[in-house]
Every structure is written in C-alpha cells, then in structure tokens.
Amino acid sequence: MNLESRVVNTQKSPEELYNFLTQVENFKQLLPEDTKFELLDTDKFLFGLKGMPEIKLGLKDSIKFTKVVLGSLGDKMSFTLTCKIEQMATGSQAQLLFDGDFNSMMAMMIKGPINKFIEQLATGIEKL
Image (cartoon, rainbow, N blue to C red; front, side, top):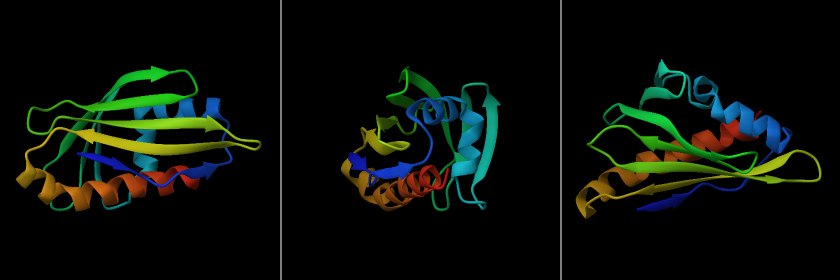
C-alpha cells in the first residue's frame, strides 16, 4: 500500500527541516493534541491513533537535507514513512510517502486512518 501526502511548503530551510525531523521527539509537535505520544529512545517513539493499535516508529535512514525515513518497529504492521525535502527559493517543500506491505483486508481497514495521519503530519510541517 502506497500513500502520498500533498506537497507542503515551509519557511524552514532544507537543513532546518531535516534537523527537526531527525530529532524524533519533534514529531509530537506535528501530531494532533489528542494523539498518544511516548518517546522510547533518542531515535524511537510510540504513537496511538484513534481506531488503530499503538505503533512504534524509529529512524531508519536519512540523506542529509533531502530525505528522512522512519520505519515501524513492530511485527504487526511493517511500513516506512519517508519525508522528501526539496529546496525552494524561500524555505523548502516536503512530501510524506507511506509504503506498507499489508493484506487486502488490513489495507482496507487502515487506509483511511493512515491517510489522515500523514496529512496531519504534512499540515504540521507546513505550520513550522
């Protein structure tokens, strides 16, 4: 299952956005206030969305100032969440890409909540 957020603009430079996203504790600022968030380590966190089990994410990969990749840490749901960052004349552009391997029944159940989640993250980035 592949989902993409809309492309958002932020006043932060690619370097600033990259540095913000590679500090996983900052994801709490991007999530809605009613979302459960727990920092597990310097590069891992747990979050909970309504209607879904709690999910552990960790920093998996990054390319300086252009890409940050988070991946699930549990066996129940295997996926990655990638933020692509591009330089703009003022600030930067970002887009979130979700890539998960789910059976069709699971994909049907989680597509809506996951789509909403990545759009909320994109909106949070836009407000930075």
